[in-house]
Image (cartoon, rainbow, N blue to C red; front, side, top):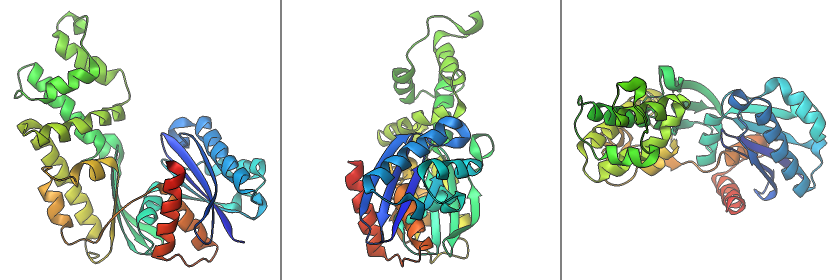
Amino acid sequence: MTVVLAIDAGGSHTRAACVDAKGTVLGWGRASGGNATSLGEGGVRAIETAARAAITEAAADASTLTAVLCAAGEAPVGRLGELAERLGMHDSSSWHPVGDALGAYFSGSSAPDGIVLIAGTGAIAARVQNAQVVSVVDGLGWLLGDAGSGFWIGREVVSAVAAAADGRGSPTALTEQVFSRIGGATACWSGVRTPDVAAILRAVYDRPPTALAEFAPLAFDAAAEDDAVAASIVSAAASHLATTIETARRGHENLPVVVSGSVLTEGMLRAGVCAGALLEVLQDADLRPATDGVVGAAILALRRRGVEVSEQLRVTIAEQVELRRA
């Protein structure tokens, strides 16, 4: 019986599944974040923990497994030999690390060619050809890119509140929403800033830059209530994402487009949101929502074992994974 090991190692959670050629999830495992780039040894341990649980529940012969690891950040390529040995797998050749963009794409489409647009904390678009990523647009990180992402929107939200607080910007409903998240300040910043501005500065500079993404949902909520400042932020973000996906699709407009990430699925593509530029670019697209990245990893692993993956098989795997996630 053909059984593969599929792992999705994200920044917050790691999920692993042993899946057979019929799409049945025979074993399931989960652990904390498995991003080896940002979490180091802790990320590697999370991958091992989730994989071991899935293999054990499935009672699988680890030495026969083909594993696909969809990883946020850089996969721990140099550690795969150690992982294989500890899990009882053949050797490092059993592992096939791929980027999370490829996993997201195949979680939403079984077609070997297509486009994926991801907008969560970061933002990236990629074109997939013959089940491989052949070109990427943006995904350059918070300092150089990720335009229109959760980080980008969150930064604009806090910047708008700071501007309103020191008199440069227009009043906005975002102010009350932001302060409900960060609380107030008990002392001024260097004895000069007002307590409100001091609270904003501490909330931003005491944490990693990408933590600003947590403020992104506030923009969508305030825009839905007709706040002009929030609507402007959402509209600008939509324009950035429109440019990203339009660039990725250029010359390949007939390909399916898988959309992934909370900024898209819970924000931009939600009714009533000021995302005209993005919606206009995608109006003729064959849009397909992504599911769980472990679904994409399973499809890629099955393909490596010579299994022909139909759309129905992808749907079956997605349904099985959703039951395990519940």
